[in-house]
Length: 45
Image 1: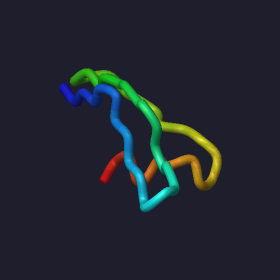
Image 2: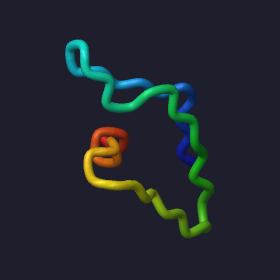
Image 3: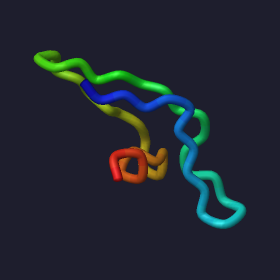
């Protein structure tokens, strides 16, 4: 299982991800969708 609780990532004064919480359960197909620049890649790093 992968869990993130209240995840926030900032680059200086710019907030890329703000207060994100999610759970990915084993054996379940999960999508991580959003528009360009939404912070998807930053979150996975």
